[in-house]
Length: 88
Image (spheres, rainbow, N blue to C red):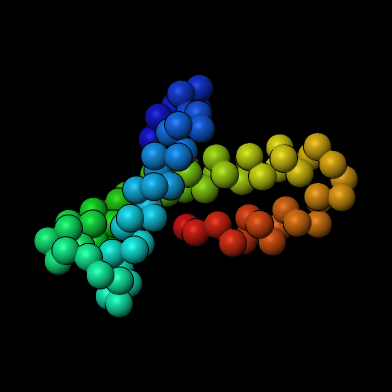
């Protein structure tokens, strides 16, 4: 996990793309080369075991949600729902 000062949209986007590919590999109905599927699944298991990486990403996303919601009082009711939908 990079330091908070080094986390930006590009870092977040790369993490989301990587997580998406790893999650797609878990859907057996999705066509995918088995060698690639296996590598993505192995990487997902390894990264999941390193809980601090995922928790850092979740904390970053929760802070971004709070920041976005603070711009308008009408957004406040959506904070908990949005944060709850974030994967761990």
